[in-house]
Length: 324
Image 1: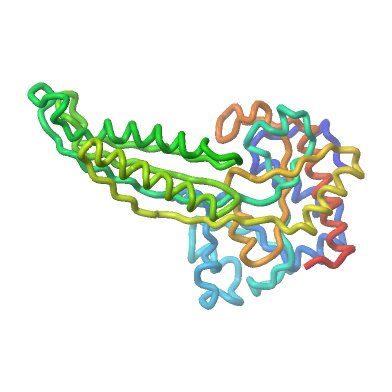
Image 2: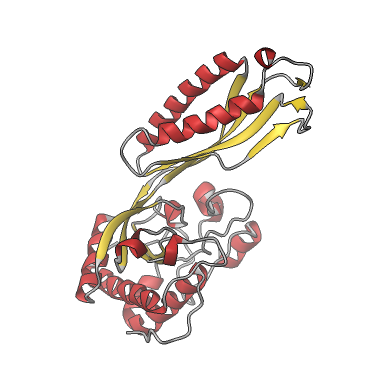
């Protein structure tokens, strides 16, 4: 067990590093057996605008099978490995991938629950949406004779919110970026470029929501005399966690007298890609106030200790059951 009085940093990456160090020290032989089949990548290492790191070996396995970790760093400077001494060099020799993470939302904190047992990581689909109208003088163009791309964009943003909330579930739809051109106070915007993001644990629901949004866009285009163009720029498929690992995580938490909740991860994680190669599991601990990606992000030392202990016990159970 670890001492919750220890000084902890509040960032998710440091939380994970502490958990790995604790598990590696206390898991001993069991950890060594698992580590030989477990390669750990940097947490959300991409800083290029892609929502998730896409490990190079998933896209080009034939080019990197059997290579050393250092070569991968050379191939992709955004990919940071934490090599395990004596670990496997064959990148496809993976057993399981289990990790500890802050929730990045407020459910656990609000409901006073100790541990989130992650059911899966949501799919994330991105589009660039371009709206073409006609730029013209704002003072001399009557209101009923405009092809205002920004007005159409405003209606589109409202439609995304309406569609995303029109069906039950935890799906979300977001327009997080918008650019209006030419961008002058006295010119009717003739072009708008904005983003559209949809997330859900069910890929079919994402497609259903997208089709509804396209229908809304067609209606807006007709009413406002503009044109819409959708360009898909990123797809991360949903990644359910392994039910066997979920059960072991839940059992481990309850043996430590900790409350649990089965829940999806609304944020993307590296495990989403690793799930294409091996069974994955994920443990959430509360984020105070549901704040993440902010200097105010914080998780209590006791919650971090709880999560690390659950991770340790779950990995010991994985070793005992020979899960792979």
